Length: 279
Image 1: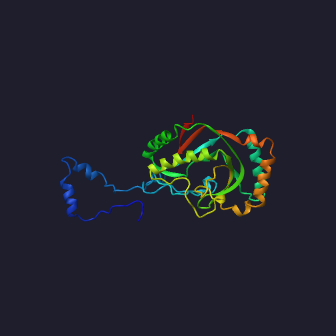
Image 2: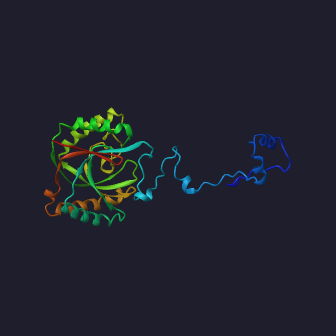
Image 3: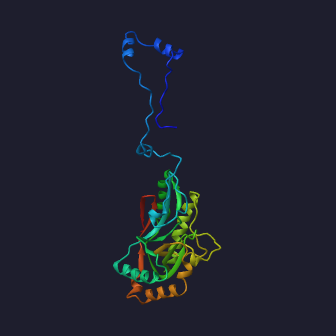
């Protein structure tokens, strides 16, 4: 059907025309005779206007090319906010130097590896919160961790992880001291998750924990350093892993460098950040 619809007129009189003429105001007859009737038209709507108000039933299209080829672990839906609880890690210049050395060597095995933009230690999976749940969730989290004190931890063991779907691989530094403190924090975060009927962090899995990023049979707290799309465990375990550990062990002052303090817990929900300082 054409975008412009023309309304046809009959050349002979019809009952419709007669009825229309009967409704003409007195004195308007002369004007109507002098003016030729204009056909009724429906003009096409410009594409720019059509795309200005997308249908509410259609969610935004995921384009993995816009975010490094990463694939969502759950579909985006309007009103749903991806939420994650973690301990932030502030990287010093020496830490970034170590990371550069590790990444340069790891890329000889997996060239597509890229460096993380920010660093943290996860206390939860990524879960979905409805918008109206965010503030009650954060308040419950604050209440649960209010009594926790700052603590020291060390992360100096290189380990390889994948996410649950095995669509991404990570190179990380696993926590080797301070593990019990993280377990205590996760226990409280898990209780909040249960309050909101969300998945807890660590649940029994049949997969080996050394190659799983998320839910582990044995907890493995870590700082992710670099990542790539796909499952690269086979390429990176064995010689590559041993060589990366050697770089860490031989790096100047690595023992002091990789010791840090957990001073706050942070919750990211969509584009909102909430910080909870430890005592």
